[in-house]
Image 1: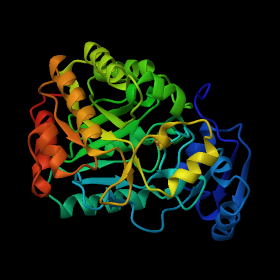
Image 2: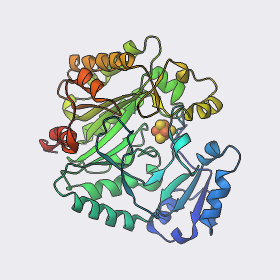
Image 3: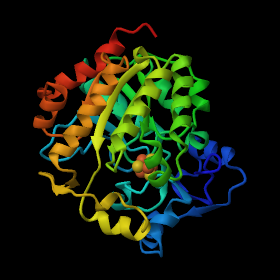
Image 4: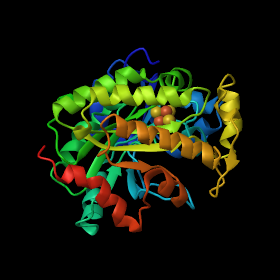
Length: 371
Ligand code: SF4
């Protein structure tokens, strides 16, 4: 586990971002960290890509640069399975937490912690995007290409983003984390269209496969404090990982969670089982030689990713859903991440149709709120 809040070993600064307000804020928050100005970002990144142990070393250094393309993109989800119409903001890329199963080891082209400092462009693009989709209960978040809060003591992103999205309902904005880095959230006024959510796993998986993240009980404590502050919270049991006795451990986790957090404060819970492209397997084997999670029986899905056989996935989902209902969570909106309509029907009894149906289902509890 990271002993305290993450501090990079060195900050590299794209010359053209040197005077941007966010760069100045980061340098103020990390005044003790050495810096280096980069005059040719392209060449700098190329050298980093081919350097020895690029993925591991990239998790230690921060690069402040600007986003040249679009900040907002539809979540890539996965072909042939049901998507949840989620939009991601490419704000910060990569993550120092280093979970065994993390797709970013394979997916990110630039092996560095990257902060995009050109925030004025972000706000303009968001204005245009929300305007174009007026009236839609869009769900937008930052936690797909990194953890939304792991750098928050450095960037203070949460304050800026919450204040941008406040009052912009029906648009829902989510910050997704495995950390307890909630100080800025606790200093910010809540709003009914903001959801702070945590990825949870069984304590055993968290200990062995999410080694740099805080223990699950600390994550639940943090969620409780954020819910007590008045925010909606969300939970993502993803990736669910099979091992002997996992069902009992997931059930006990859910009972503890719903004992601590009032279901009325939970905006949504998602479930997803372990899945990864075959090409991630050798990377995991090399970087995490002691892990066992990639050696379970798996099958190639319609999207080419390896996943558990359908009966195993269904069995796990059904047990968790039953447990949620038995512990007072029967009204909490549930959805599955990257699953087929067959699994949706058998596990949840319905299948979302059209892009609006899941959006309105997930936004309904928040729409009724008086936060
Ligand atoms: S917290 Fe998420 S982004 Fe960070 S290493 Fe783990 S899986 Fe990857």
